[in-house]
Length: 374
Image (cartoon, rainbow, N blue to C red; front, side, top):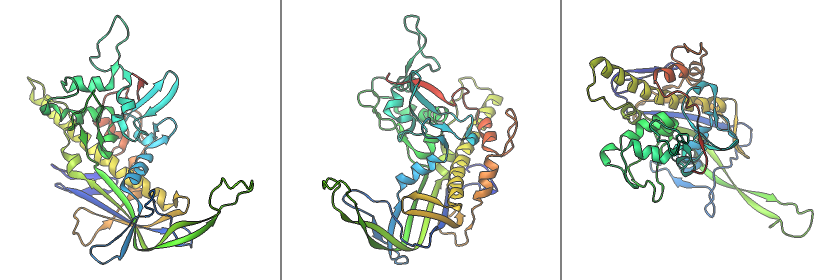
């Protein structure tokens, strides 16, 4: 972190750390070394040479985009309603309904709270004006513009940092996986975005393509089922690695706290700074917990696709890219400590619930329910 060491789940991140790198070695959970990598239309599996010459040909097994989806998935208890797991109880997120029908949520939508469906959904926010005596209601995008003092589809550049505080109070997970707000003719200012603070991929080292034949049976006999004999692209690899990178510097510097008051007292200033620090620590802790939860699933064997069933063999981490002696990544302790139980009003010290409470996030936003189709 920027001003002090940060300890979570037995892992100590020293003061001044910029990045955290986690590397896991995976193996096929069966005796068959053939792996089904990610493929793309008209391209197939992605192979590229290792520039260092150490690992021959590398194959992309899971892309950064796919891994973002998987790391977001560990937070979701029910993908059909977007509800969060119990470890993240109290963390804000947005649910969009049409009457009693669930439509989407920031936890399952690919664009998170910046999704057009969510941005155009309506609800009551702080300062939402009443119209004709009706209950307060406005589109989320209009609330965002109002908070940024925006006009038309633009906002003053000096007010852009406020979007990070808004995101923290609406959908903190979006700050980990990135977002970009862009609604044509509504809000198109290009600065309303944040890059991924947590990236990951899975690659096969010294990989070779393997063509596997398949046969399609057409019991009806019309020929509509397509080619009867086809080829499936598989690979074999000397080693499979899952690589994770946490941008600690980005999370440690996000302006996720409130703006100072015009006549702020020293106690109020100290409280505001402490709250911002706790919010940053929460984002970092959730990032670590996401990695640890995914690795825990892998430790028991996980099927990433039909013929890509992998299991965790070992995992190390380092705080500097050129560090030669990485340490064991305590994923099991991170998962255990992050979910430690406690009383509702006094969660276990060091748990995610404890960090969520210290972050002083708005209440009644777990979830914030909006009406679809503003």
